Image (cartoon, rainbow, N blue to C red; front, side):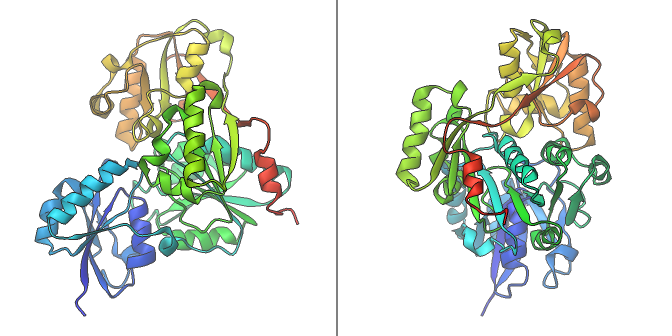
Length: 439
């Protein structure tokens, strides 16, 4: 039987996992290329042979998704597999139409085929959109686990932006481990909060190998699902966070809606700062597609360190990059904190340089806030220059990491803290107690 020629449409994350679990040793398929979008500096590289396996001794090229129409014809492609996340349903179908018009089949691989089974209980924390509040939800779960002396390890959704072979299995226990792997700001934002709380974090490219290593040092696995993707591991408890500030998005984005429909528990976060009618929209949509899910309402109140020092000052606000870009949020925790302290927020766009300037040009909804873009050393330097050029009294930092540890800021900076606070019952403790992990 003739092998099917395949292109996997990706963004340096789920695409590699789908390949590793479904296509790598599958004699029925010939993966001709990956395509890439969303993430800079991926195009032109090769998925290395050491990861691609015996069927691909030369590795697999990574091409620009913009070339898709030509690639389908040049490579005689039979099938294109969509393997990335946090995009509108309409976007997915426009891409499907492009594939179909060029003579290939369009495919989505179901979670059942790529979910790995763990020998340890898995708590998956996912979301319907980037920036909904997975981080503070995961931190609350870690707090409960620590209080109950349950040894856990976190495994983070992939962000392999460097040498893929070297990044196949990454283990982070200390800040020095992040330096060793030359982590980007986006990676550090995800790993640092776990390290601060005494947890080991795994990430990388080969999630089968990662899981088997993690199982050796944990009694519970926390799957931290970035970019509103579905879990790579079969969860025993699937928690999904929804954001009423983007009410309706829970049914309009892929694969966020899949998460919503699969969830055991749905947390409606940021209730206190959202419009009541938007909270009702989210509740209505949950009842429509997943009426049996346990629903928890919560807030993520913000607090600024040494807030009296920055109150009323002229500030530049730096926010989590993916929340503003992929997540399409016009603001984050830093902006809310600055408004609460009656600060004068300056427009950072006129100070932007290099790729930071290009980010503002691409994402027109960003006006009063500066996304903490840092997909490499050069971009981190450009972020630093942008902040340091800004004419202001102080910097309010709404990222989950201590940004001042990684770039040199030439003016006083103040971190924003935000933690999950459930409203009434049920709450996370009640949900976690039912898992009987303490026995």
